[in-house]
Image (cartoon, rainbow, N blue to C red; front, side, top):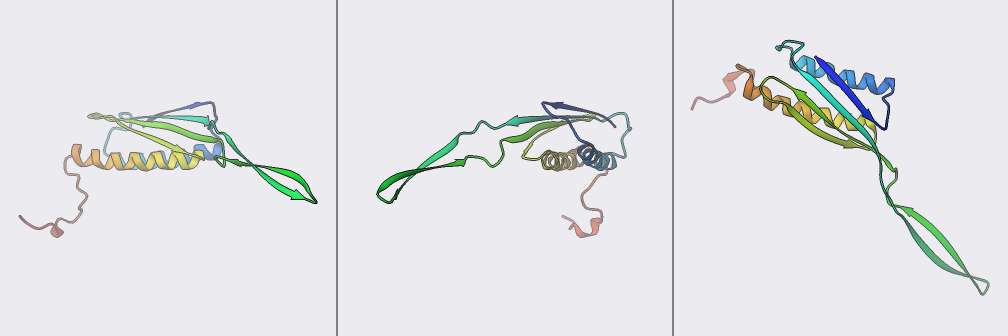
Length: 143
């Protein structure tokens, strides 16, 4: 399988690459009936900063007859960085396309590949002759 990884505003560490390759092996295993050079996988990962406003709360206290003001900041989001992207798997009859988003790059890739595997199961059911989710047909009633 040919694959391309494109990153925008971020870089992939070695552990993230290993994580990606594990998902890639899973897809190669599911597409073992095809020519290995035929499917093409394109992955795009982007890093974004959330535009957030810090919500200020001003509390008033009285200490010994004088007023004191306490200013507390409540951030809208715990982290201002998130990752999103898309995965496109080009197959002979129909390309599969999914989008993903997450706070950590590993979790975002997990979400994307989970969605892609669901799309791939649907594709295999429609386009692979003899593919069935039911391995044993004795459980299916005759009309």
